[in-house]
Amino acid sequence: MKENFVKNIKKAYISPFAIFINALTLLFSAIIILDNHLLNKLPIYICVFYILWIIINIIYLIQEKNKKYKMSKLSVVRYLIINILCGYSVSMAFASVYVFGALSQGYLVFDYWLLVIGAIFLSWLGLHIFAISEFDIANRMSGSMFNLLGIILKLISFALLIYLSVVVPEVEDVANFIWGSIIIIICSDLLIGRSYFNYAFYLSSIEDKN
Image 1: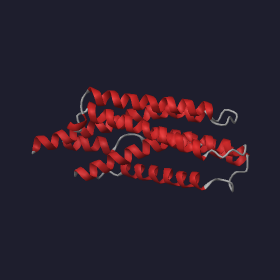
Image 2 (image 1 turned 135 degrees about the horizontal axis):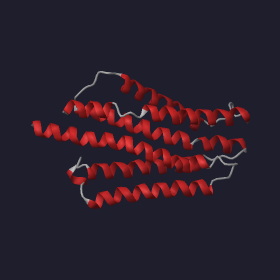
Image 3 (image 1 turned 60 degrees about the vertical axis):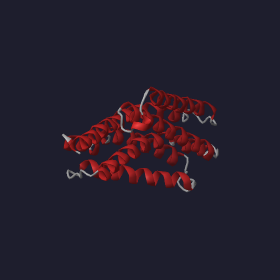
Image 4 (image 1 turned 90 degrees about the vertical axis):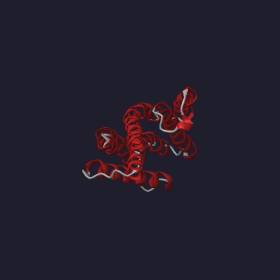
């Protein structure tokens, strides 16, 4: 049984969803960049982020396609972390398409972009706290209080993303990429939540064996 839990964590089936959303992200980004001749005007922060985004997704694909798996707790935690990074990098990249639209009109939106990334991080934190509590992964963080805290953080992050999509400098409809990332986060949460669920059973199987 423990092997099945590890396999489910290692192969979280994020790739079909990630490939589809990443393809849309690259398509919209390319259209805006090429139409507005932004290739030589891209800020360093967005270039660094996109490089990291690509690397993370490649690492996840390698993890998912590799049939070999390790049973150690350190390896399983690594699988889980890669799942989280991949799932949430997809929503971050999608929301970041707004940056290209803003640059096309001369807006410098680094501060807004940081807030968007912060809101998405807060969304993961809410999921993390809720999953740890709900699936009894850590005894110190279990109970309805932590469940509620996780839900509140998740709702705050969504509210912040919606707010940012309204207050950022308006450039046609590209601000829609910010609130649109909420839909992607929800889809990612379902897949990543499955990894947390299996991780809880993995820990339980280790305790039973001991």
